[in-house]
Each structure stands twice: as structure tokens, then as C-alpha cells.
Image (cartoon, rainbow, N blue to C red):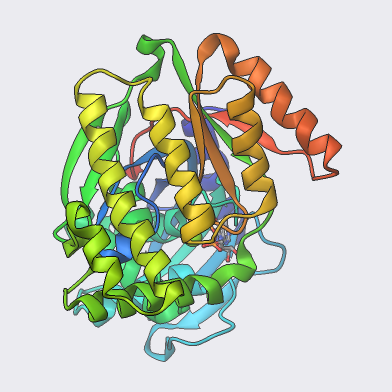
Length: 388
Ligand code: ADP
Ligand code: MG
């Protein structure tokens, strides 16, 4: 594996070949896994992501003629050339909609952003629930912030990237992915209140506890799940409306049973049950980590998976197979991570059982005739930053 500086040199070289000049800088933004707190971020709730060492790199230089040029080393096809004054939200923008949307969002916020040339290269698997889209947006935001000396805070950039994904790309995501990519720090998980973006960096060094967090990418792309995501989101909003609260975050866990009795619709009821118990699980994981009871986090992850599978109904056979197989092979706990319908699962496991659990999952996938999964260790890494 090359170091990030070497990769940055490669991206800078690619930029030079494409655009015939050196970039003004290279910026990096990571993908993430979420430890706990799934589908809570658009309910004003709690999340706990950590950044991966895998990043999107953006080499960039400013332009003075109001033109935006975009190229990705990871997508076949040429360079997009767009006029800033013609940027408009809409479907079918392809991958360029993510970075173009960020520029659009910055300009819509009245920020002095001009044209730019951008060239991307990424180590974040796409559509694997590891948030390559947010990494692409956040890399763009950091690059533009640097090119035009905007001095934006990490949280502001994350909000603008979410605005881009919601209103330019058309994906009604919450704020977790963008905040994770912008604000995580190495060696920590980010405990985030998505209502006011209050954050706490929670030390998360599993090796001192003899533990390991595995990421299992099932290779099932979740790209067809956008409609289901939007429909879950609508169910959550219907639940909050039925209960007369601004968001499901405002339903206390102790009052959940009483709240559920006030909801007629079965689909809405089970979505509410997932979100309220999931917020409670985040609180529980924080309590356990603060108390140094890291092993006890495992069963909470598995409970989270069961809730996502049975109540929120966003799992799939491959994700369930990872969780069931890992737990049967001696993992402490496991769950799907990210939006669901494919993508990745995380597994908390004793270091000395890592190989056994990995082999068990690989074998189970082979027996089920599923595509071989990609398995790696989640090393909590730093959020977006300038590399060169
Ligand atoms: P996830 O964020 O879980 O990876 P999404 O469906 O939200 O999945 O985002 C994936 C999309 O982001 C890709 O289909 C592509 O449009 C865009 N994307 C991600 N990485 C890159 C890249 N390196 N180059 C170009 N586009 C990318
Ligand atoms: Mg995404």
C-alpha cells in the first residue's frame, strides 16, 4: 500500500497531465463506518462514526473564468466542463453532481467561490455503505475552502455538503456521513448529537483491549435503495407528527411503549421503535466505553442489527449472514453499518479470533454462493485535511 503522500503525488501528477499545470494543493477526505446510531441522523438523534484510512483525494486549482472542470481517476469517461452560472440541481447529473453540488451550495450560501479544476482519486469503495459520496463532497468542500481562503469551520462545510447531497443530487440523507468525514480524528469515534452538532471525540483504541473491529463489505451495492431510504424517512416523520414532537429524538426511551400505543400504522410504529431504541443504544455504548467495558459493546451492536433487520427492515440476506456467522464463530457482536440494503457490516471480535471469524464468514459466503466479501480492519483515522 502506498502512503497518502505518495498517492497525493500520483493525484497531483494526474492533475498536471489532465490540465497542463500543477494543482494549488491536494486535499483528502475519508470514508467512515458507523459504530452505532443508524438511521438516527435524520431524526435529530445520536450517531457514533469513525473515519477510515481510505480517502478521496482531490487535487485542485482555481480558475478565474467561471468554469468548473471535474475529472475522476475512478470513473471511465472524460472531463466534465460546467459553467458556474448554469449549475442547476436535477437528476442524472452522474457522479459530477456531488462535487458540482458542493460548489453550487457554497455559492448559494453567498460564499465567494469561483471556477476551479478538480481531479479526484479514491480508495473508498463506492456504494459499499462506507460513504464514498460524502468523502467526495467533503474533499471538494475542503479544496474550495483552501483555494478561495473561505475559513469555513468543519461543521459548516459538512452542512453545505449535506445541502448539496439533499438538494442538488436529490438524496435526502442526514448529516452523519459529512460530519464523520469532516470532523473525525484518528484514534477516536465521533459521538455526535445531530440536532445541534455538539460533538465529543471518544477514545477508541481497541488494540489496548485486545479487540478488533472488522469491516465486511458484502459487495452488494446499495445503489437501488434510494426510494426505500426516502420512504423510511417519511415513516419517521409521520411517527414524529403522530406523537406531536419535532423529531423522534424527542421520544424518551422510558416512554416508548406508551408512545407506540398512540400510533396506528404498523410500518410507522416499527420505524419509531427502531429509532428510539437505537438512540438509546448509542447512549448505552457511550456509557460502556466511558466505563472501559468495551467487550460489552458487542451485544449492543447485535441488538442494533436485529432492530435494523426486523423493525426498520433495511438489512439483506448477505448482511444477516455476516452477523449470524460472525457471532456463531465467537465474535462479541456485529451489525450492518450505513444505510443498508447491502453495503458493509462491522464485527467486534477478540484479536486472536479475527482469523477464525473471517474464515467462517468467507466460507459461509462461498456456501451460499454469494460474491466473496472484502474484509479489513477499521483503524480510526483522521478527518478531512490538506495533504499537499
Ligand atoms: P456510498 O456513499 O455508500 O459509497 P452512494 O451511492 O451514496 O454510496 O455514493 C456513491 C456514488 O458517489 C457513486 O455512484 C459516484 O457517483 C460517487 N462517487 C464516489 N466515489 C467516487 C469517485 N472516486 N469518483 C467519482 N465518483 C464517485
Ligand atoms: Mg453515500
